[in-house]
Amino acid sequence: MTNASIGMPDVDGELSETLVRRLALVEERLRDSVTNADTLADTASRHLVNAGGKRLRPMLVLLTAELGEASRPEVIDAAVVVELTHLATLYHDDVMDSAPLRRGAPAAHEVWGNSVAILTGDLLFARASRTVAGLGPEAVRLQAETFERLCLGQLHETVGPSRGEDPVQHYLRVLSDKTASLLATSARFGAKFAGCRPEVVETVAGYGEKLGVAFQLADDVIDLTSDGVLTGKTPGTDLRERVPTMPVLLLRSRIAAAGVAASREDVELLGLLDGDLASDADLERAVGALRTHAVVEETRAQAIAWARAAVAELEPLPDGPVRAALVSFADALVDRTA
Image (cartoon, rainbow, N blue to C red; front, side, top):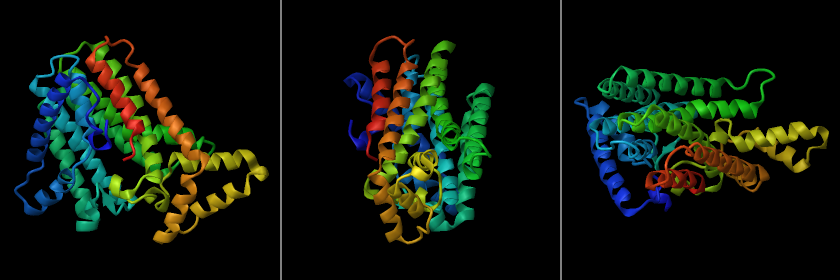
């Protein structure tokens, strides 16, 4: 699998053709869903849709739906819902993180300001809610629970761990809510609306939950090791905005455990990270110093472990092209460079 096609698992030809065709239908529906008669709302809502993206969440809906009756129209609606929800969170996240770029384009708040960006995110949440309402009360409840977890994840990331709480474990809980919850719902929606048995729905939801943590840990590595041209984001933005990531948390944990015996290099690196990273030169120096540290490989190892745990959740599923594609999907998410 290439980085450009990260959303398409490595599967047999027939399944691949089916997924490509159905993903194109989702893309068409997605663009229709963000259309608005108001010019500003229309332009702002289309901003991130037009910038592209991996479409991982709708792909996961379509893939798990292949375990049942994938041609049901509700499956496409569910795929549109999860991507609209994801896009809405990006508008909000970029404001909170002061991220200048998203998917290689200026973040919405850089173009229209914070208020318009936040309201555009709210508008996309509204469009997602309108679509999910057509899927029935159970779908509305699941969407609401997911939205609640998304908010809690952002809230807990913002306020940080409580006194005495392990920062690493706190961060993993943040990832579970902020990222994994929507991937779990994507997997659940696909199987559910394809008419799969409840035990199959729960199996793929467990897979999606663990996959989400693996995905975000891999992102923490990519933020430090990849070219911003490939990722569409400025490397080290999280460092500049003091957003916790696993490599920095592991560095802090390593220094705390060593106490006075902590290496001079580690202490100096943490001092650099805790300093003023407002200038691009200082940020580049901090990214370069952290990039070669062992904590990055430790984070990569954690991502791989979570991906393997996700694959283990698939054990009850029968062998076949869909299960193989889900395994490939997990492998690709941690092997990617963008």
